[in-house]
Image (cartoon, rainbow, N blue to C red; front, side, top):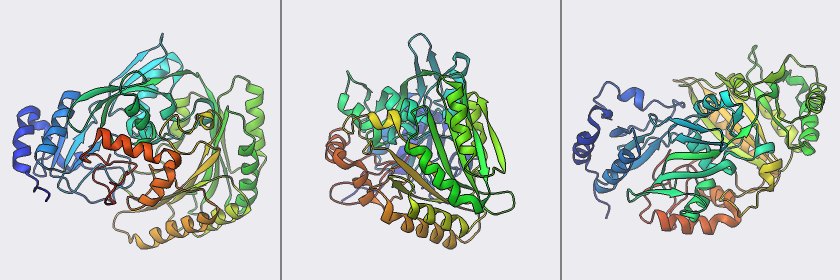
Length: 463
């Protein structure tokens, strides 16, 4: 029988250590502390522990276990399903752990568990160095990395997790351990793809890469050119070199009708080859907007700032595709034409090159073949009826399903899609579950992606 949560006892224990950095629903700062990027989730935790260091994180984890409180971890707060908050639970808030220390001689950067991609890139910029990130600078590096980390540098430098050299992790029993090739190597393996299901990462160390500028930006085409542009995009990504990674999809247009977008990121050492790759993309149609040029990597990501406004309501669905063949082109184009909201979008992320050359058993991440990750992003304003937008996302996902690879990117799967989580890890599933039993035998953590317990499905804690 599960013991009842003891919120008063947890409050007393944490208040003694954190003072006014422990927030309850009665505190003035509580609404801001539980506000997420996605305004749709409605879970209200009992307590928010605004931690400042690993020792305080460890205390919060121990108190949650002792007082039988559901536990969640908040870093960037960008999980679309809102799993950073648990109803009646304790939130371990990492947003103050944003320190970034650069060692340019070693080519290494150490970042706090609450640091965002923007924090890291800003610290590295004076050294003309980067780490692979996603396209949104406000996303937390820890959550992005531990589940995968698709992004514009995937072809040249791999996923974000492929550049993780080690991490400091608070385990379920409150111990702080180092996970790297020489210390807790099985935990290090599991963290790279297994998500936050093994502990709370309070610091992460990354390999950095010299990269002063990229040839990058945005090409926008009218919707009636979607078929031609997507066919050409399929040809481009099929034989793209490592240095050329290209996103594509549909974004809200200024007149309310979606527009087709191509977002190339070319990071090679041959400027002429980079320009030729971009010219090939330009020639796929007649661009409405052409904003491609040499930019610092951080500035290139700024082109995506504001594309998805905080506080709107979001629902995501996802598929993995081996390529963009004719049925996929038709399904994507039809979905864009039937979009239920002027704010919704579809994004295709290009996985190839260095990321595809990592052995599938080298990390917990389960798909290392060339592929495209599809994000189906339904968006509506607060107070709107979610039904038509959910239906649009579900129809789009269903239309792509016959052409999709098994599983899907676990960071984007819905909490109930536990069957697809298992398929996503492929041959790594059994090893990942063994690691889970070793490091969290009492199932304190179950974050993004969700690893369902052996005897019952369902998430228990989120990031």
